[in-house]
Length: 203
Image 1 (cartoon, rainbow, N blue to C red):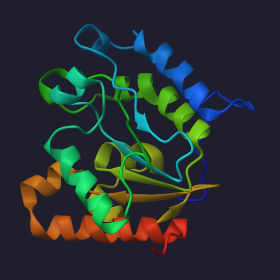
Image 2 (image 1 turned 60 degrees about the vertical axis):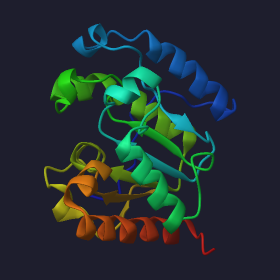
Image 3 (image 1 turned 135 degrees about the vertical axis):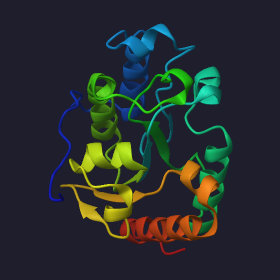
């Protein structure tokens, strides 16, 4: 783990990242690379600042995200937004947020390996276009994919990992914090502070 840069996207040009992200989102909106496409309401591509220093990567859309087309808009998203605002001092206009899988798995089940593999190029291109300084992975699936590890989140959180031009900071999925409460929330807060320090944001 560490000292690796994700390089599986395909966008490398001088065009503004927002323009290319919009192009990529249009492409993804018609994606049929895996069976999840048959059951979605819409693709949940990602939202936020295309020039963000900070990016969050979660797992997969849930019901509310599938309906609205935006990641993390349910209870988990509200908790995440509150913790980021309190610990880093920014809202969604200042960061970017996406998922490993862009379509909702049936009954909110875990995404399968083939579904993750089908969506992986989209996430790779998002990372290459946005070029964040810090990526915070939310939960096991994003963390295992980007760190290329089989270790669970409890084993890898609490530190940062250099990934070439950026750092990865693993933390819990906010749904875990909703289930588990105080200790997990406190550890998420500590991870967000770590991300803020890596970006050099002191106020």
